[in-house]
Length: 280
Picture 1 (cartoon, helix red, strand yellow):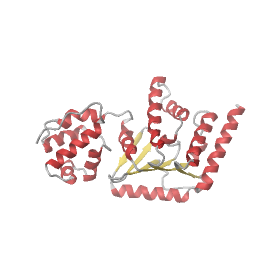
Picture 2 (tube, rainbow, N blue to C red; picture 1 turned 120 degrees about the horizontal axis):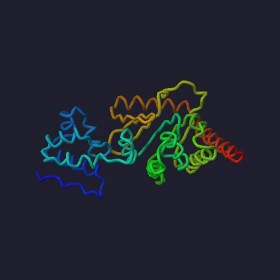
Picture 3 (cartoon, rainbow, N blue to C red; picture 1 turned 180 degrees about the vertical axis):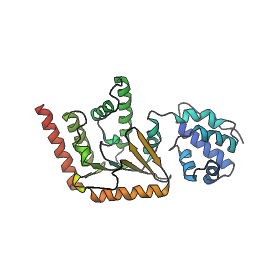
């Protein structure tokens, strides 16, 4: 079998490594489960590597070269495929988010990254890294706003967010920052680009009190769930786990305010913050 070509640095390294993995596997007439078995991973995990929704770790690259006889190709190119502008705990989720057809997210404390304004994101990163230089903060904000470009398409992906009431009332930055952030969310809702419901304090205990979650669906790969906390995250593809968190999200949605009440509440709080900013 001819050896795979080296990566073109101007292309997407992860996508090219995934494409070469699929080519090498199919050349040996192996199925995804066949290739996953000696690595103790599922066939769907192999599929995610091939589609570029997961980064290839070096331990897998070594095994792929051994099993597929690719003469060190995956080891040589693994470093390029692993590069990301996002933190390690979020890099795979960000790559998956970029090709998702639907994103459903529960936000317990902060406005979701895809919906954040520049001022809000900057305040968040200053809180996370109070001693970071402005250059570092600028890079983090730029990466977050670049993610938000996903919503520039008028229809895809579908975004359905459930914002805990704490997200609306916890002041991130000053009152002007909050006013702008909530106006931005309300504007996206009015333009019917996103669906957002508010989970009120009065709903009491609920199915996702442990932290935020993001469900992602795709046109081809199986769905994923990303569980996130402060400086940590976990991407899950196990069908039973995904089903568990899909149910949790459905329960949250059932307890959240309907759209006709959520939008006026967000808009009113934006006005309240704006009034407070003017007084200050």
